[in-house]
Length: 204
Image 1 (cartoon, one colour):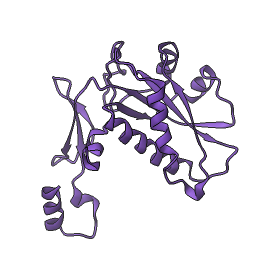
Image 2 (cartoon, helix red, strand yellow):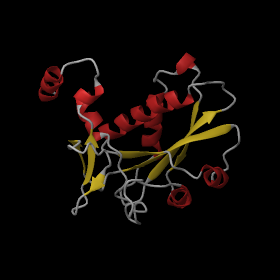
Image 3 (cartoon, helix red, strand yellow):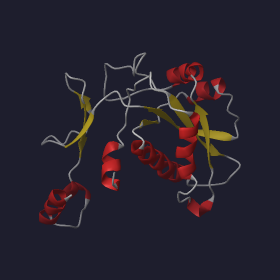
Image 4 (cartoon, helix red, strand yellow):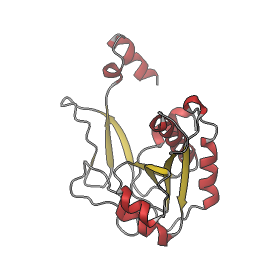
């Protein structure tokens, strides 16, 4: 796959084939990619905790909130829950004002690396951090930044342009297909003509 294909494939996946395991070695391979990422001032303040066991996954799952726009959905049901988690931490002993920036770069790298392997990822920011710290015995030295869930996708996600109402809320149709509206390019680039952005969209 080329880069555009990886980016399009790297959607937020929230339902997984729970019967298809992911080895810790594969996750370590994904994390190894992040060592090559840019880091502000090269501080490299990020640390990671991994979970690939069902016992620990079952403890992590209640600490997370899923898909805020889907009001009647409390998250994946048994059989479709994550196979693995990565807890992304910031090391408070490494002074850095750009932990969130580094985290974004690292997480997108993980998402792209996972997409190349056919693995889905969801970046979760709505986390009960106090509870997660307690169950995983995370020292206060580390700030819990995000949690990433991983697994082989058990859902279809499609991208589409926002409609006339410009609504960006994702939604699911009656077949369970997850629709993600994206703003058109001419809304994003402020100093370029609509004629050019339209041609760019057609060409790519």
